[in-house]
Length: 112
Length: 115
Image 1 (cartoon, rainbow over the protein chains, first blue to last red):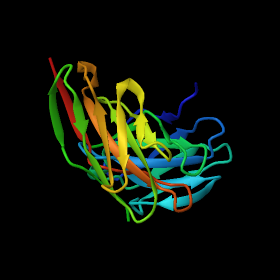
Image 2 (tube, rainbow over the protein chains, first blue to last red; image 1 turned 90 degrees about the vertical axis):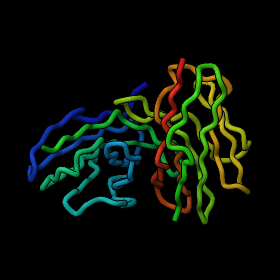
Image 3 (spheres, rainbow over the protein chains, first blue to last red; image 1 turned 45 degrees about the horizontal axis):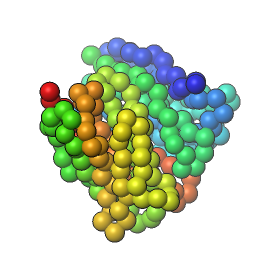
């Protein structure tokens, strides 16, 4: 069965650079969530989209922005990267309200 | 606001022994509850979920959990663990008060199974 696809899987950037993370949800899933998991931490919700509109917002820095496109894939744009942004970024998708969220394998971002 | 407390940060156990990973939640509204497992350098895999109905939920890999509304708990159990169960386990809650609902995770419990 198709799963959530995230690209790239690994990304190394320098401080103050920009990064773009991509998420391709499971076909027919209309909701996408982004989570950030710092080293040794639990995943923290960043932002979610339903039908291309932002549906909820968590602890996402102003330096980050995200959107969901017409084909339901989503991109997380991160600017002015800081060392503290180094983390595993997960995307999850679901088919509707309260439904199970299926997680992608994550993108490991390292900021040097 | 919702929150999740996993009472043990680490649980060491011998192979074939039973294990219980504890999870308590707080919420002013009805919730959905989940347990996820994360193997080293991997993503999150759903073990089981409670949405409604029977309070005893069975999941994959022989795990089960019991929802206790009065104690606001959702403890995870397995009667006999294997070395391969060594991983980080996260309890999570999601409310369905409206909208498309984020998961709030606990801090995680590291299960270490020893031979």
